[in-house]
Amino acid sequence: MERIEQAYAKLNLFLDVTGKRADGYHEIKSVMHSVTLADTVTVRATAADFSCITLKMENSSIPADERNLAYLAAEAFLEKTGITANVAIVVEKQIPAAAGLGGGSADAAAVLRALNAIFDHPLSTEALCALGATLGSDVPFCVLGGTMLCEGRGEVCTPYSYPEGYFVIAVPEDEKMKTPEAYALLDEAFENFEEPQTALHEMLFSFFEEDPYYSMYNVFEGIVLPRSHAATILRTRLLDAKAKNAMMSGSGTAVFGVFDTEDEAKAAAAKIKGAIVCASAPASLTL
Ligand code: C5P
Image (cartoon, rainbow, N blue to C red; front, top):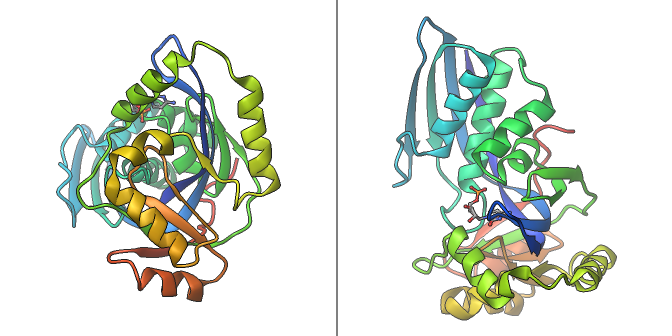
């Protein structure tokens, strides 16, 4: 059987890091939002005596080997369910990699959704999310999609209400930031989060809740933007092009602007080389 899934990119509309855990991960509070910028993930699977997984990455230089999260997702699904199958995955890449847009997590989540559908839902939505969490902190959100408040290390997702909108995403070509490196820089700046700043975190989130456009927040901006001239310029250009607000997503270095209408978003994107116009995406699964 074949199943085609859209693997939507995510934007962090709010991203705060509230503490450091004993396992080295960080406690976060983030509002994640799926957008229509997406990879297309095609999964063909048939039951067999022995499992065999193949992966093809189209339109991308990302290695299509057993380190790839899409491959690992198929492996984890088969192991968890005890199913043995021939699985062939093709990912048509559209989401820029290593940019804070959750592309790898989205592909993994799409593989989980596809295999669960092909094999007639052996796993509940909760179980699929729990399996996703073993692959990466953002994978449970990507399994669900829509808009979620994500807590814990990102894997504890609760539906969150956010008005649909249009977005322009701009990605610096050369200046990338690896997520572990961004967290390490944050640890340095916040002295390993040893002093709890509960009141400050609550205040930032209450501002966002009151005004989700003008009070967007990403704690990584203060760390990453001073190290990425290109991202800083793109953010300013989005604001100059009349975005209601503009911010970096995740640990960067992609930046995005928020717009009310598609026409406004298109007009802004026309002024910024390589900018991508997208809209709020529907949820893939609901809790
Ligand atoms: O969970 P994931 O594999 O995507 O995380 C990649 C890296 O990002 C982790 O190894 C860790 O260094 C960092 N991270 C973190 N706290 C989180 C999520 C990620 O420190 N909540």
